Image (cartoon, rainbow, N blue to C red):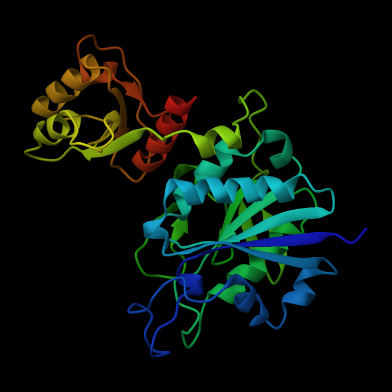
Length: 328
């Protein structure tokens, strides 16, 4: 039985074009289809090592403009292919801006039983396809190397020759090609001339995680969860405005993630507004705006530490976790 590697296109900079090959910033994302992108990589058949190439355009969007419906479509198509015995794994071409959010979402909703044996690898580019020296083709080749590596599994991200776990990957730079890191967890490994060198074991699947119904995700209205930040002079006005009675047709706020300073600390007025929101039934989760470390829980009665903390997740991922918790 001929094995397959499936490529799911989502758009992004990797599929972007500019009027000049010298322009790496003023481009339009999501202009080139995934099939065309793959055809432009001459050594891809060699990297596939005999695997059949299958591609599908799931979305064609600048990742900053992604919507929940497109996430659901991606998860559904990923499941469709992962259950097929002749599929070795998936490569998802994606924009860099929200790749970390999509990677975390997929790691939370795709069935652990499928992820325990097959890899789902997100890859991307910091330069558009029209650039004089685009980075997308090499990133795709590196992603294929990971998919075809014996034992690879779980949701992963590959960029600039570095392999990250989907739960930990985060965009850490605005411009350079090596734009991603894994925070305190560190990268899983590296791709060197088409060969994977692991620094850590592949991600451990959460065997006790309750499977998420794709039909449920597609049919229900996703709860509105917002993020607010603490800073010098912060007030509770934003939280109070968010939690006020919504305008006609608008969804009420069901949750608020606060990106606190330091160990998740918040200004006294912001804390008061969060207490009011919590008393009104809005879920509050405390995270940190710091790029490293996790919010450490503490027992201080009546303090900000009594808010639920984010279990080590940064604000954008804590928001996804809270959305999924509310959906459940």
